[in-house]
Image 1 (cartoon, rainbow, N blue to C red):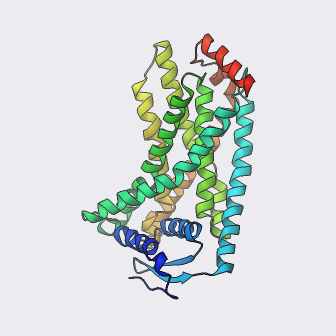
Image 2 (cartoon, rainbow, N blue to C red):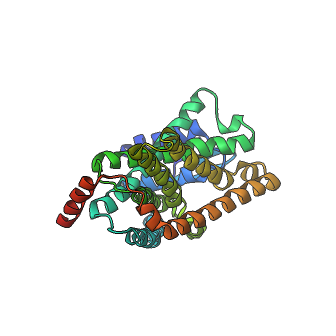
Image 3 (cartoon, rainbow, N blue to C red):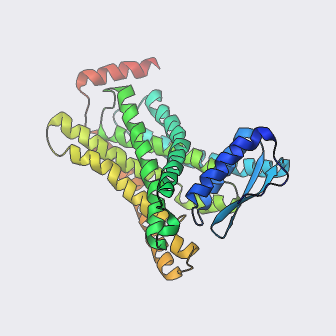
Amino acid sequence: MALFSPCPKSSDHAVIFLIVFSLYLINPPGYRIQATLCFNLYNMTISRTIILVFLNKKYLIVSAGKETGFIMSLWITSTVAALIALVICGFIYLRMIKREVPETIGKLRAFLPVVLGGICMPVSGACGLGILAAFKRIGIGMETLPSLPAAFFTAFFMAGFVEELFKFLVIIIMMVVLKDKINNVYEYILLGAAVGFGFTVVEDFSYGNSIAALLTRMPLMFTHMTLNMIMGEFIGRAQYNKRHGNGPTALYWVLALVIPTALHTLYDAGTVSNYPAFIDNDFAVGGTLGGIAILTNLVLMIHVLVRARKKAAELSALTIASRDDEAKEEHADASL
């Protein structure tokens, strides 16, 4: 059911229909972030306002029209959220770059994966919506599952799997672009951190539509960076083992995707998709799930960041590129 007031222009009908139809197909109980994402993308596309309200497991569009003050408020909070992520995550990332020994990476390797990481955020979000819509069409949806399985179902297909898969693909793309210029395991960790950094900035812009959302996301801002640092290290160790013919290779490639996906799914199931708490008001189950998810993420985030700082030299010594490759890379960096 959708109510429009005032009636939107005819040129906007197609966009509004697509948003309403996708929400109708997915029907995610309490899944506010999807509404926020569509809301922001809609504003950025046609400079009009949509207010999405959750009511009885249905989304209603109760207003669609030009509301300059509301749009400005949305843009300000979203921009502030993105700038905070840019400054804080950027500071950590630049510090990580400086810790590499004996030489730091060049500008191309430092900033291109950040841009690609940002691009894959809306792409992965659209794919997540499509996957849930496809399940809905065959009769599988959150409303057909108990709240706890529904939480993990949504978290996996909307966030954990699709987002980590696309960031995984970005790392592979960077490996193709750079060919043999990634010299050691630490540079793969930097590559993962860069992809997560870019993803975080765009995600915080998309979801930072209020002060409450901004304050909620800030304490765990480094989640994407740390997950992709884990991903990058597994890929780096796989490449290191392949180059030196010692240790597992295929297993590390699998773990590079499986472990971040599992951790991400757990985190989202305990927070934004915590249906036991949000839908059933079962705060015993929902609170336990949320506590486990947040504590696991917090401990992991601190451990990964501290470990990368302490072991930067050791991980930099796990060389993958040959001496000829290193010489060529030094020449290329000097020319930038």
